[in-house]
Amino acid sequence: MTPNNPLIRKLEQFARLSADDRRVLDRLVGERVRRVGPREDVIREGEKPRVVSLVLSGWVCRYKQLADGRRQIMGFFVPGDLCDLNVYILREMDHSVGTVTPVTLAEVPRAVMEEITLAHPRITQALWWETLVNAAIQREWTVSLGQRTAFERIGHMLCELFLRLRAVGLTEGERCDLPITQAEMADATGLSTVHVNRTLQELRGAGLVVLKGGALSIPDLPALQDATLFNPNYLHLDREGRHLDANDG
Amino acid sequence: MTPNNPLIRKLEQFARLSADDRRVLDRLVGERVRRVGPREDVIREGEKPRVVSLVLSGWVCRYKQLADGRRQIMGFFVPGDLCDLNVYILREMDHSVGTVTPVTLAEVPRAVMEEITLAHPRITQALWWETLVNAAIQREWTVSLGQRTAFERIGHMLCELFLRLRAVGLTEGERCDLPITQAEMADATGLSTVHVNRTLQELRGAGLVVLKGGALSIPDLPALQDATLFNPNYLHLDREGRHLDANDG
DNA sequence: CGGTCCCTTGACAGCCGTCAACTACCGTGG
DNA sequence: CCACGGTAGTTGACGGCTGTCAAGGGACCG
Image (cartoon, rainbow over all chains, first blue to last red; front, side):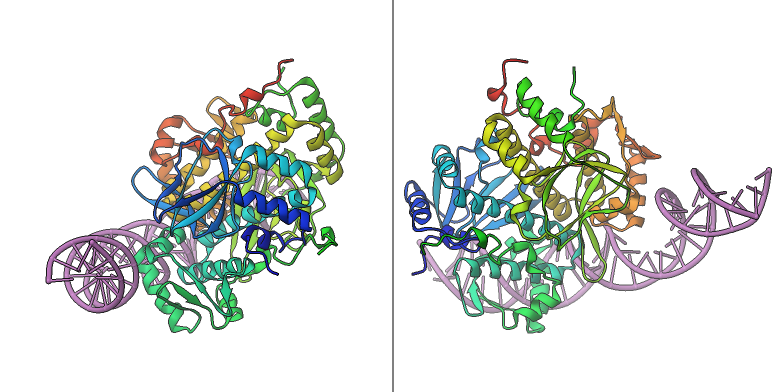
């Protein structure tokens, strides 16, 4: 049976978990659930982070708004993603986290987080892997914004999101939901909405993506990867911790 | 007495360490030292990371080279910086790390790292803080590349580097060493060398920076911060873990 | 059926890249 | 002492990718 807990699903991209590991992670998502509507802030720059948030459903983004109104989305969280293991160490948030769609979050108190990492080394390793992958994703965004053209940048982002959603079982064949507006894609890619629109038309024209009504379809993933210089190595999805696999199924 | 171990110096931006903590960290930098010449790779994309590297002196950068030769520097390491706590969890590097200047590194074996984090909770917290700050820096680069103009981008980077160097005691008044070429600044900011050159002239013309012969001077830091929309909050340098302070001096 | 949000399109401008040449600096060696 | 070569920095001309401004179309909703 495939787990419906997206965090378990995701961590098993790294290593197989034991039945006990899963129980622990399931307890974690059940304890304190928070629902947030679309386009709301989960936490704002300057506030004190108190819990670790785990996305159970919906899309969330990190963003920063500059004094003059310019806004940059620094990353998306999809189900299974954790907003910074151990954020609570910092006194205040240096950026905001806001929802894109309606969202359900599991809010994990500090004590629970610490208890788990003390008692469950395999989970701890998997969470470290998660942290390192998130850092790698952030770096890849730096590369995109610094070096890739608008065409590559947008295509690359769609590739990444597709693979990340696939890792938590949220794709069906070549398609997945993509509940973000072109304005949000613009804020994420550092482009204007006008240019995002034109570039999407180019991507469609090249037959690389089908994007309509909140649904994304990638008819030929390798072709899109080639066209956008996409190398999936930074997602570290090939079960790199398999030597840690549990044996009990 | 101020420590000459830059890691200690840096972690004390977070919380005061005990004499024992310092001894542990001093042992860590002494054990295995590696010297690398300028413009060499410390580790290359695709290789297996085996140790955690800590910069003792000199400048290092993370970078990624795309298939067609475009290169993006994703971040600089200066003395006191750690190249990814726990990298060894990953099977292969998704980017390269190369020196800018001649460098001395402390290579910390996995076992030592794990031993320390098990036995010394204050150090562990401080290292987590380091990790979170690094992530915040990477996000800020995303914001710079996505939203800031060339002028703001370069000025912002100089601000950041100055403050980071100051945190490890490598500034003297308003000046510090800046041993990077304009070509490297270009790779870091996603601009062309020509444009970096022109933009630096603008920054000089505005009296915001003095940059010559590998030395940077910032006559009016608040002014530069204003001009580049620089908010230092993401560096979390205000001793946020002071409640953990050791009492033994 | 009016309003709002999102997407789309056209005209125009500007930031920034490319190309190419030139200068400055520095260490080496004749 | 000067020639030499290599690296880093500088400058000018030109072009193009991408932003801005503005207007219109389509879908959904109260």
